Length: 257
Image (cartoon, rainbow, N blue to C red; front, top):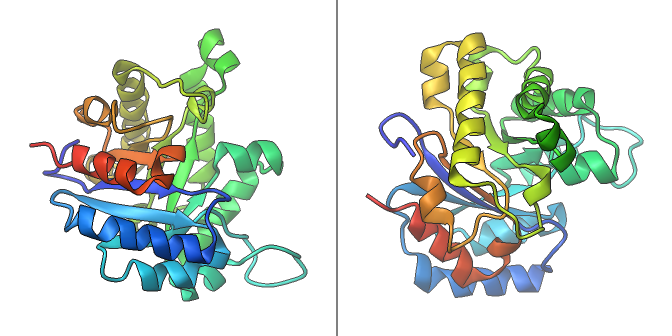
């Protein structure tokens, strides 16, 4: 982390978990434990159906609320989808885009992710853009090529002004939900490479101020070591964020001096 130039963000991605009543119970459980995070912004990313309840539940808990996806069109015949404007008006501040599960299960392409980035930014949302390689790609030694392609594709047409609202999350696919974690050195190497790519396109000032998160099985035991790296500015937390105590422990790990 480098708090001099950029914000630390610990974002819990609930995926398809927790009902509205469970969301309220989670907020009540977190409230006495969390207090006011000293150094970071805590974020909970909920299914769209939970958004308004989450905004109300976390209002006094110092947790920002976001959601896990949006469509790239403003409106239309897209059954089961939510537009960026819809989730923004429901109270979302952040939206996760390009998550590997969306790419794998719903065949989202890099072109789709780029269109969603534009839609999210137009609506005033802060996108958390996910990029990451498979185990096969890492073993072939093409991690950086894959990350570069995903990043360039997703950010195509994004202006220097817009990029200031973008957060990037490096999520190695082989470390999501597997219990495996990239070593601090591996995670820092890729996060540093992402910052270098951003610098080449948008300049040093933008790159220096961008929050880059690590999103592969960060938990209460490894968070402090991962966050000690200058180019890792927080975490996109999956399963570990579903337990209030564990989530707070990760937030507290970001408060290290």
